[in-house]
Image (cartoon, rainbow, N blue to C red; front, side, top):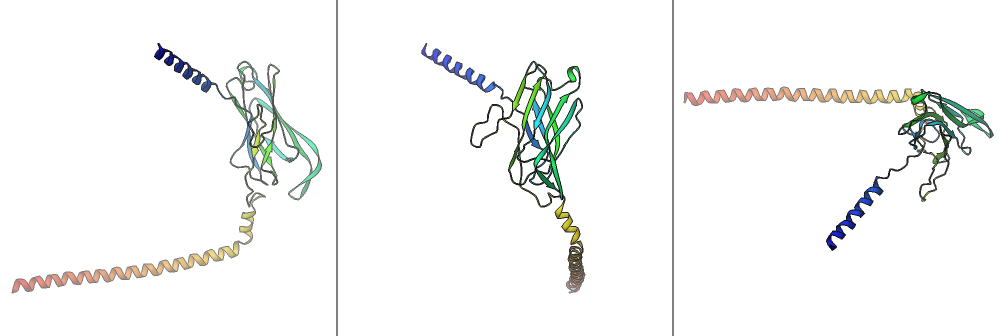
Length: 253
């Protein structure tokens, strides 16, 4: 009886463990770059919005942009079944981009489903990506935090606005956060390429000189190799002739 009860307890524990492990982790609204999002540059990012409900459809997504690091250039990609609206706000402190002062920046982008029936919005069990081209990315921060609001057709609203504190557990409704990578030399529009163009004559001359030296070295090596090859053939022929003569002398003796 004791063995049976122990088996039952172990089996019950294993079953509960399976149930705990089988509970799915809820997906969150997130943002990821296509490639890299380098400081001081431009990037294409995707806001990934999953439908977390079994009986409702997501029909509206609103992404609010950070005010402490405003972005002057934001362009949404056309998505079938959705209408995108870009909202700009006046800046307290104008930005300077490419030598021009910008007094407005994007404060919000709103996507609204305009389809019908099953084609309208994000259906249960599906997700949707909302691409944006953004820039110029700031150079004085490692991340950008976007607050997102997700609306369902049953009027339910989920606010993904809680910041993620370092070293702390993830909040229940975390705000989408874009990690920025280190700045590159050509993030201002191909500075490296421009440098190459302006100093092209000197580099071309150096490259030509290197090419000529390489060609001369290669030509000298080819000549030496040919000479050695001819000498080897001559020595080989002489050896064969010597062998034939030696064989004849032995035969005659």
